[in-house]
Image (spheres, rainbow over the protein chains, first blue to last red):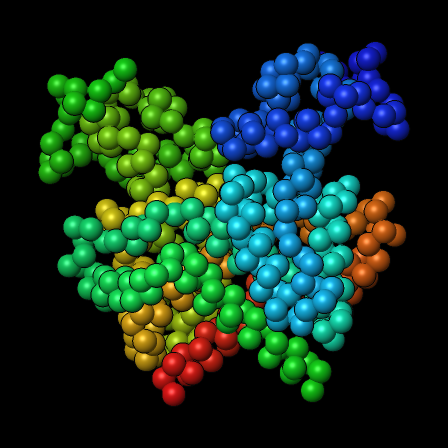
Length: 223
Length: 223
């Protein structure tokens, strides 16, 4: 067993060398998670992928938990929060939500991890929440509702990212169609949206509904 | 390698024996997934858990994909769709959504699987969708919007199930609090909902918003 207290352990403040850095560790971890799922990411598989001894890896990160925070934080930098600075709330939320969904559609194996991972020590993630919070504050949101609204949006986004990776035929009833006639008819009817992916139609519908519903809630609270 | 075309293979229509049935396979698979994640469910680990030879298991299910359909279908029977028969649409959706979220909060490792698994050959799952579809039809929903609305609700529910398993302290900024003052203040302010779990506050807020927004959309479409 390689101990985190081994003699080669680097003190926290010391600069990382060029061969093994937080950036190279993050990149290697992302590749591992995407190919093998988050169960496939272990400290030893990561060391192998980086072609270093586990002891070298432990000089930079103490545990798999540390690695997941690095990965989460890296992925969050890809989410577009620019709208919250300049755009009206509704437009900013829409830009943010589509961007966030698209990023996590490419990283669904991270969702089960990220959804339950504490944000402390994840500066890029906190920067995203800070930008979103400012946007809600500017739009006059009552303080106690801001975090629940962000969580609700995120939950919808995470679930929708999974849906965006589902096959288009996921809701075809197959041989059982005759026994479930109403649902089968509804699945056939949705094909009217012929020029759009089904996942995008559902995400657009749900996002519009959420935005409208959240705005109504705030208007009610402020009345 | 055990072949699905082995000589002991049972024809599809033949009744299962009492020792190894779809029910016992489903139960064993659920236990495996919950303890080791869905990556830990393999045909060989399942055979070991059932104390049978892999060849016996292959007499009943052809692949891990078949097993996951059994598991998905079993879990879906726990979702409450009774409201769609007797209750107004809004009340029925609320009952369904809370029940669905609670079931999947206990089965989050299944979400990445279920969200992309085709429903064909999953009769209990189809029965759930049939009941929900009837409820939407009774409420006057235009046919092409029903499936996108169900997908949007499900996406919100799946994401919220993950959130319901997150630690209450997930959004505490820790040592970085000073750098992200607005978000830190918003996290502190949400504690006003002192008597409710944070995940329940967020789910209730989002669900109310979705229901209100979806109703408004339908009213607009029918106008």
